[in-house]
Length: 170
Image 1 (tube, helix red, strand yellow):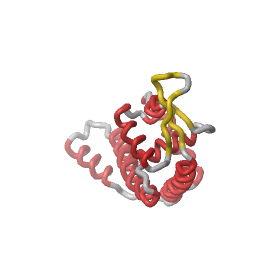
Image 2 (cartoon, helix red, strand yellow):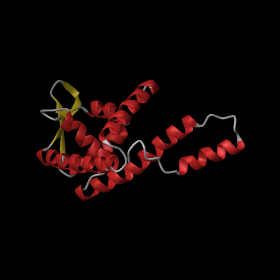
Image 3 (cartoon, helix red, strand yellow):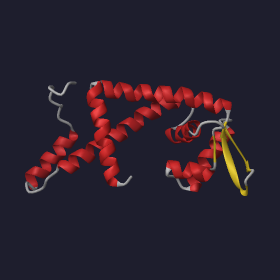
Image 4 (spheres, helix red, strand yellow):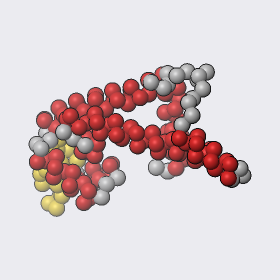
């Protein structure tokens, strides 16, 4: 879709129109923006789950493997570093690590620098899987972007969302 083509009406338009009818004094632009971001995030979460399912991992499990992969050689982080990056509680992280370790996608070992600590390391099998999963996920994301935006619009949207994200402190 080019910028000259008007965007189709969506459920958020219906919601803001209802508010305009009962409360014409309200500026619903923020509701429209964040409502669309929320709905887009939910819709893409479903698509990403479908992309990862044939590989036997969930989005959350992919996130753990991808974080280890992005960390670079030797693909090792502490559970605390993983939790902080993924904004997970240590309890939530433990469950994911247990499942991924049972599947042979990562291993846990004592931290040589901290007797109380652990190190989580991506296995070769985990590295191969995450490399395949990232390609599958990017294909889904690219398809969604290219179905609605040209390259310049996608770049502009990315910049605007970066600006908005920074302003929220997230």
